[in-house]
Length: 470
Image (cartoon, rainbow, N blue to C red; front, side, top):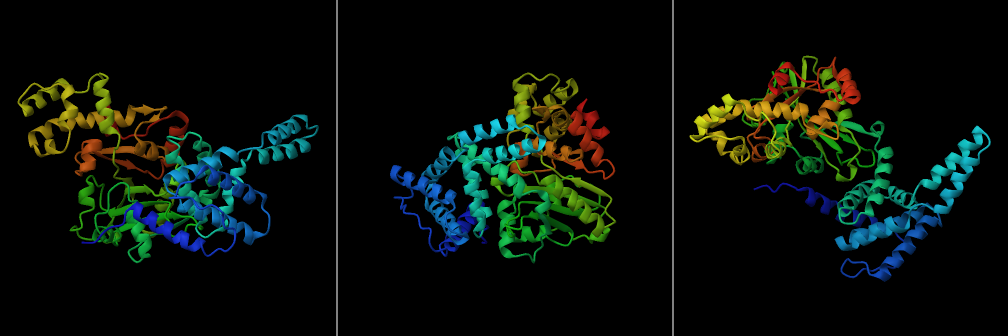
């Protein structure tokens, strides 16, 4: 039996390698030896002193790199409690200089000429940058230093749930990453079966939509009638930031198990007329809030159009992760017209007892209902109707509630078709009663759909889906 890597396995392996690499940097040794991975009050004072020494930037480039390596080694040697203390010290004591900010603001207000004002505004921008941002950028001089900061932000965001002061550090890193990970700096690469094994391991560990069950499963997803593309940053060359998996098929696909069936014959890509985007996975928790997906899809569409001009349709086969939760809430809150009279009669007949809408959440638990042909038939139309209503009308902060819908609609796609029992996995039944949706990217409508969505919140949808939602 082959053991597949997990995200935790890869992270621990990477950290061990990072420690080994950074120990090769001489000098800059911290006089901090935490006991059992925890910082004492005395250690915390020494840590702040080390932070200040790094900010003073005494010595040359070699010295600065050695100091950053010493800090990084210390952080990696700490346990969770120790890392919380490390980040709290950084967040609490190394913000902006209030006096410098006040002085810079007064200079802006007192500027007598446009040129003087511009110079004063520049000084103000520098004063508003927290000292910890300058300290954090010193890690970029180290091998894998950018990856270290990405993982550090992921931990800071997790700790911030119980330590709100760490949200400042999280925000500082997000500001840095917004510039460092601008899409103009990213490279799109196609990943194939002959790509480095370390990269293939990461695909398995990072797949967030449809779990990769085996190496054979992965090989099937990288076959000649499949494509996988990812964005990479030059400072993280073997770390995909986001990747998309594509199937080349004939006609729209409506069932993900059939799409990923390893027994299906391989199709000659030149005979395919449709590209199905069936999985898009963000891989780096520390890059939350930095958007790449819309750019990746557009780049992939352009690449596939050039490679295979026979492709005429570009569509997703997407999960609907929020549908079941919304349905439970809607019923509990008394949503009207959940089930029509004709549907109620059919469900009563299939169940052999009087049906009421309050029975739906319990009825849809698990997947047994889908094996009952009469019950599944009676549920099909009401569930499709409810799902169409969910996708077209359920909102969160004036945006579509469903995160996958929000993503594709903002990119210019339309809600094209709902697929009954399109995902028969346990996850599919739990999240969406087995339903899936095709979002269609019409090349001549993408820009217009995107503009209307951003400007007016307009949701592009096919007549079939709109009719269901009525």
